[in-house]
Amino acid sequence: MLLAGDIGGTKTAVGVFSQEKGPHMPLAEAEVHSADYPSLEAIAAEFLAKTGLHVDRACFGVAGPVLAGRAKITNLPWIVDQTSLTKELGLKAVHLLNDLEAIACAVPGLRAEDVEILSTGQPVERANIAVLAPGTGLGEAFLTWDDGEYRAHSSEGGHADFAPADEIQMRLLAFMRQRFDHVSFEHVCSGVGIPQVYEFFRDSEKTPEMPGTTEGIALAGDRTKAIIQSALDPAAPSQRSVATIETVVSIMGSEAGNLALKVLAVGGVYLAGGIPVHILPVLRSARFLQSFRHKGRFSEMMSRIPVHLMISKVGIAGAAAYGLRREAEAQPADELRRAS
Image (cartoon, rainbow, N blue to C red; front, side, top):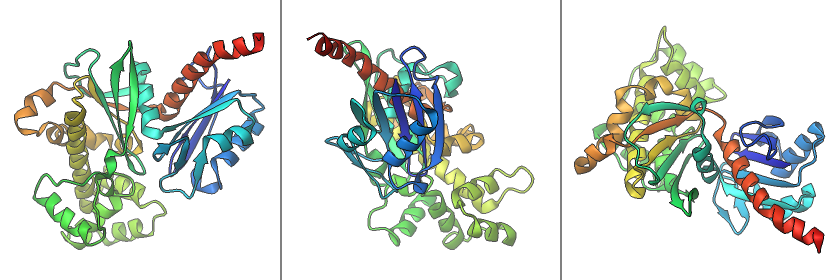
């Protein structure tokens, strides 16, 4: 059996998977707050001890670039190393993937219940696919067709320069440059970015808001969650929070379109991450797709690209899918070694 995990800056999901059940039906699973633990080894060891299940291998999608089997987790003081994990957990092998590469690995096996369709479009068979995931940070990945199957590729495109697309965003960029030497899309289109955009509307645009709402957001343990909730409040939505979320959605659409152009993702674009799921009512509005398609001479092509939102636990499903495939590939070699 396989231990798989989706290791994020805010939360970590782990589960045990088998070849028989596949990547969408874990035999056991758990989710914890990442910062409550000193390391991934501690989370994995505690989880396996509680389940009592024996695993041979592990595969983790981690929030950060993976270089030579080693990763520094973004927004966490963790170093994750394949060799160390293999030894400490007593496994045959451990594979590390960038978390967006793991999410991309889930795309070919998505079920109807795993996605919300934002635009049906006209997908081109076996063409490139793009993945954009605004969560705690902003992740980007893509898939290409190779030798009869899709293969996922990681990137750090979320850290590319933020390019404003209208007058408000130009003022937002000027505001952000007072705080950061380099302003990336992640700074204004992610869980860590939403409070920054909110402060822009508070301090620079002077967008009004009821005093009680301002105080509630300021004192909230999770300001991003509080801003989203106040924007979507059906009884008394916050004008400042609404402006924040609408701007973030416009930026999200623009950057999703940028990624689609860069990798020619006429096979489709898939959104993932906690932010799109939590702001789905705004994402369904015309604002997102208008920004996505606003690409000059390529606007007509952009209108044909399907856009989906992944709403299930695709991070851990993708890590499990990759790990189970690697496990299946390793079985003949293991059997040969045992026979010799």
